[in-house]
Image (tube, rainbow, N blue to C red; front, top):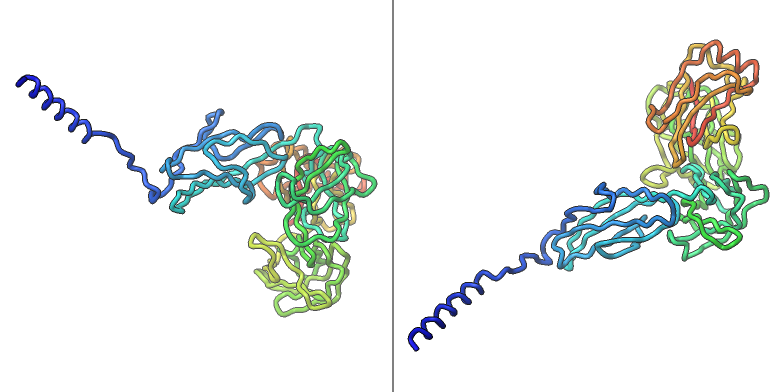
Length: 409
């Protein structure tokens, strides 16, 4: 009996010892949330995703702490598309800003930012219209550029990336080609809308987004000028412009259309100057900046002389910038020519400048332009001038670049 009591006493000590060493959860909802690591099948550990087509899912997962008290939200362009640690979803063609948010039950949060780019199939209708072409005014024609666009039966404007909330359905204007189609926006409130193409079978395709303005907006040509020369500012709804003000100088002698105003730039010292534009009814023409629409911007006296300015996505012979002999007549031999460009999504990016017969290159083809200096420069030599004079123009061509300005110095 005595041995039995000793045995029970030993067991009691053992169990008491085990209870004191039982593991306990140190996590708390008041802990600051952390996104510890990403994981994906490719092993890149990145929150930037390039998906090969609209049927390729965004597949990834994250590890967070405190894991027992944290919810993970996935946002594309500010829209909550998924909640959970592991996502596997497909999205329409396009480029999206990604935010992965970790938030605790106590309301504490952290986030990581990235991007999602979904490429189209080669046979899909797709629009790669650059940013400058994505600002539209109801009632005015707007041209969308891309590929396989003759397949487009309807253009949808939606408020969400999946096309569930359709605001307007637009029939393209007659005469669409594989690379261009025109639409006229009906009455539409200001704002950003997703563009979705719909073919005759009812299938929906991603096509980027569009910004609708019911006010007058300047889009390009206003950031710099050469005193005493012709100055052209492009935009939308500019037919009612009455005056341009540079510092304290007001210019009222203007040539204007719905998409541009042209006037003689006043004399000004080298440096920055305040620029604003007014309509006849006293309303302002707005300028698009990183901070949104503003009524006044800074314009700089340029050391370069502009030959051409606008927006053209080059596609060899189908889409190119043409510089006529009249446009090139003041460009001296030996001057440096500057080619300004943007790099939209495309199969490849190349630049070539040749004469109108494609027989003499002022600039032989340059591939891999996404990694080249911007602006790209070359010297205008005697042989180039002779070729332009003989054939009547120079062609700025190539593929996959948005050409925005050609100048010389």
